[in-house]
Length: 392
Ligand code: PLP
Image (cartoon, rainbow, N blue to C red):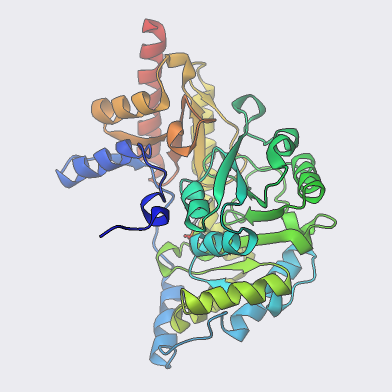
């Protein structure tokens, strides 16, 4: 039976740049001990107190259908959190509870784009972005951020392709680069969105993982609240990746319509997960800092280790649970370097090429293994890079 072009064309075809990851998983399955520095998943599970809250909520009866748009108490709780942290008035009607940030990205693009519309996004990018845009029938168009500018996007580059586009997707703190957009970058982006009448879809799922600088939520900039859809999630902030819970913050009218989409797609988020999320958010900033702490520590470790030589350059990671390393001095592509590192040293990192063209010649290290293991893995990576650079 023929399938729709939309579903068969979702990934865009060709290699998705994840060969290293799949190979590392195969090697692991064969019993090889691999240092897995690939996926953005905490090396601790969800805190037991949150799991207790979830179990308690399930036992107390939160197991039936829940409100499609999210339970009122959680929408209120998220609205309060956002208002407190950003200073922008936020009501429960500005909040839609969704099963994770990814579902939020999909729904937000549905709200912004019609069939065939152009949706802009910044390269390097989180792997699902182009497929998410294709999934709503829109046309993904990448705007490259440059390694030379530590992957801060240049608003002029966005403006150059913005004519006729419907939306722009940004991500700060950024996966994969660790860049945190400066006020200047954010203001420039806001200007482009206003000049070209774009929706800004602002993926802020790493907003609690900030090592340097300031997280500026796009919605706080003048004139932006009415054209911004912020994507939030408890996956990274509360180590709740498997619970699938997040939110979209936006203008009331947009949230109302995206709520209708929820009724026709997800049918809401499990009530016991929503109750656990409410409990998790109540634990406050100290709890979130505790979840983020290992990544801050390991980011410092990696930067210190890399600082001792000049073949591998670290992109200054200001946030998120990754460090991007520039390995262009070795003469290898990120893909070839990562494959070699896996085969020779059993260290798995993601090639920059799996996040778009702008990060070619880089590899992304997820800071998701114990400190000592990470140090060993980076030592292998540096050794191998130095050997290759000498031979080049
Ligand atoms: N956005 C970015 C930039 C991510 O890195 C991820 C997950 O890694 C997501 C969104 C999706 O997160 P969630 O688990 O909330 O769907």
